[in-house]
Image 1 (cartoon, rainbow, N blue to C red):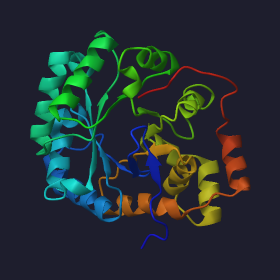
Image 2: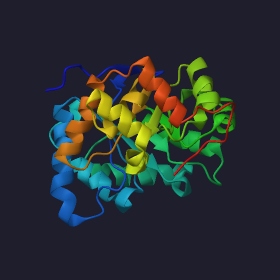
Image 3: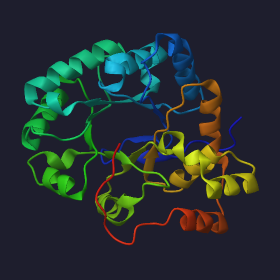
Image 4: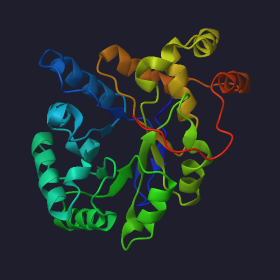
Length: 282
């Protein structure tokens, strides 16, 4: 059993959410994996990972269907996050997209609805779409994903744009560009970031330095990579785990304490940025 409860992160709305959640990227793509994916999400909920992140893009809606099955009968326990594609981010397009997502999820509302990334539709129109969804009760809050500092500054300067509650971005040991730009910007404004791909879709796990730290503290490389991100108490982390074993492994990362020597070794292997860098994304 996990030793520590999951820490909570406060959103600008005042609501608190689990720091460690569950991602669903690449779920819902294979019918033969459906049962295992649903059971993995259910176990994550039992272990307190009740923030679940999905998107209309994932599996062309298949991931939302997986989530809907996993949370059936337990909606009140879940903080549900989904995302709208940029091509659907007009005022009218967002209402239609959100309604389709809700149908796949089997829910009446989404707790946090994100613009997946920005493209051609003006941000003011997207904000108007979010506000319409709020008035209709289809969402409870909204945010963005893959926005850099300039995008965020443009957003919060718009009427209503300062209601943004998070920016979901790529962040892991190998992708640290936000540490000298977006992260301090968000911290000054009390806007928590949400980190996707915290183990770089598994590619980090072969790194010798990461494996050395893991062996020294008797943990797995994935747990060390997750513990490294979770040390930032204002950061929400959403690893994907589509098997029971991976869910347990992710949850146990919260029981790991990295020493100053561990952190120094990881910094040597994965140096922090010397200054502001462009946002990275997958």
